Length: 258
Image (cartoon, rainbow, N blue to C red; front, side, top):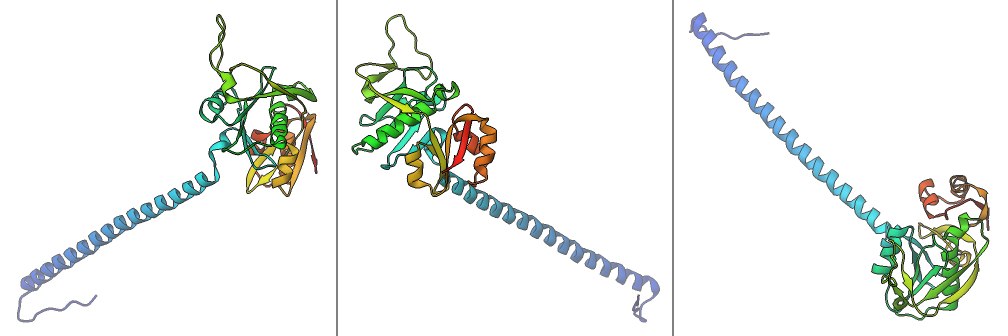
């Protein structure tokens, strides 16, 4: 380290000069350190802002993919109608109370443990193919599947025939409704299919799934647990196991390629 001395000054005066210089240098160093700390803080804030922006974008993407009807049983019929059904008592209530319009058609079975399914007409005439497919879905997602019944009877009515008002002395539990007037009965075979429609995992009547899904599997009653069936389905369809299990009917089954 090289030190310079002013020969016109004594040692004490030179020492004083160096002390003054060191104070200036120290101030500059403190200024640089403060500037660096400020820069780091601002950089961290900017990074946090960018992370939040990216996270918000990802959430928006997820919301775009996750549609309102995904909370229910659902499929699109071969004629293009959205058909939704309850998963339990709570969603049965929601389907009927919040998502049923006067021109829709409501489906149910005489036996307890059945979803209420609704064909969303959107003001269009509903065809026989959609009615048949929705009847199959109603029966297949009912308790009849778990009981090993291969065929069951389903009925459909107009929305104004469905009411929460019970007869005198009767009480309606959550998800239960009174049906008034004539019922249109249909005998159906319990069978479904599962596939991907525009990256949406759709489980429903075979004809409906076949219309929209290039790759699909047939789901019939059998001896496989839903978790085992889901693993087999995953080999052909790129979807999460939990998502596959969620759309399958309750009860043992047999899965085969179409």
